[in-house]
Length: 485
Image 1 (cartoon, helix red, strand yellow):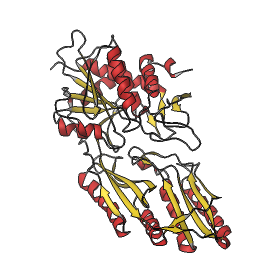
Image 2: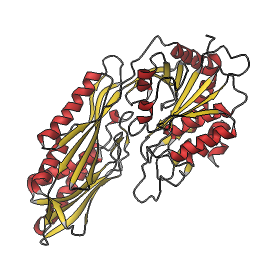
Image 3: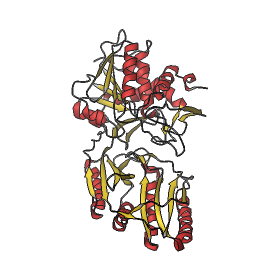
Image 4: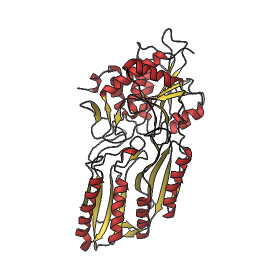
């Protein structure tokens, strides 16, 4: 069975097409071409701005011309993560989708339902001839996942709608009316390459088997962070044995919890077996800590080729201490909305770079601007104390909840009418582009909603089949129920 056999057929057909178009963040050119071809085929008005954002417009269906213009919005790019051993070129290869019981997932990679299913729904609305709606604008933004640069570059007047439906949420039956703001903090260590000794033995320490996940939507689950686990072990090693750190690598994206990390170390031969025993004990502790959330976590130690150089001992020590001290996870819960994470930080990546540098990437989120700044400064302080160079991005604003939103009330009423139950009204800790839209279009009345997805930003990402139909029905009912101006 192919996903094109699923219902509603039109949405899954376009989702299938979207999964075949490579669209890494900052490399959305092929998706832009796909959207331009779609507009040409269906004779839909299209315009593109300098950043690559695309807006398609469709007039109202007969009798609905007096309704306000509604903007449907999704982002083009996807997080590109794959399992070790999976051969996939995200810049050229299509995603291989698999129906797995009640879910759709990909074969060893991220699925890209975030936000490909939103794109598919917009295309389905544009292509359909039997949907009731007022004037429609469909906005497709670039680079949401790695910098929100598309939303930041959006100019006033590019779109005209007064209502915006963001299709980038991950729990059917939940309507979001606010989100956290965020910023990135990067630390750079400079080291002296030091020749390795032929009297040492060299080993690769791996942390793998973690689920990973979205650093906004899943930070509260206590999932294992491979960077933190690896550096915990390196700290213990540094306290007890004379060793050298040759390389370290972990995580990839600022908005993903690190799933895998590894380091290559040099040991004196008489310490080899003791270190193996220490790693086994440490691995048992980690497995016990994470048995309910990351039961497949594994730590391994294997012989490695002798590298030519190692990181000088002073820098290695400072790096290990700083990574161990760097906060990660939930920093505070909301006092306004029960169960909502207010503030968090993610130790996202550790990468060896050219020029004898090591780059540490982190991201901070909060629904309170002052708390976002405070936790960012806590991370800054940690790395400044270790002698690193530290830089912060401009970040992006949060989206303050508006409980008096008219479109929120319409979404509530239509959900109740369709399904005979109440939708949950929520704010989300993950970042959405909505806060940036408000800076250019302060009049916008917005909500965000979507079908159910799990473990996005990881190769375990999956989309619940049944919820796509429920969400699609709700979207159509909202469009039909927008009152006249």
